[in-house]
Length: 101
Image 1 (cartoon, one colour):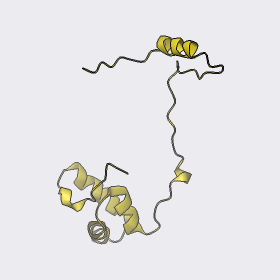
Image 2 (cartoon, one colour; image 1 turned 90 degrees about the vertical axis):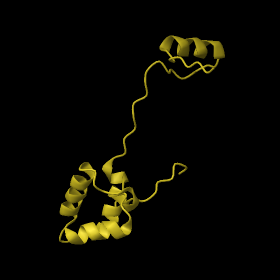
Image 3 (cartoon, helix red, strand yellow; image 1 turned 180 degrees about the vertical axis):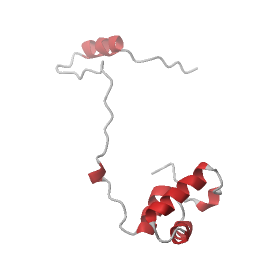
């Protein structure tokens, strides 16, 4: 049976002292998340590709959504979100995501 316990600051300090390594890292404080700035994320210039990328729709359905919304990306995105929230989009409209990326 696997027993998992919380890794406390006290346990971290005890481990760092027992390792005897000079300059051991202090793990008593939680790590702060690293956020990518928007300038690091490059979205496709083609609005259909961008809709496909952001929605995970297959290209065929991203193009259809874009065209049915007057070739206006903002309208297409809003329409996609509305349909997704209503849970009316079948799963076969989406690209299959690999868990092993």
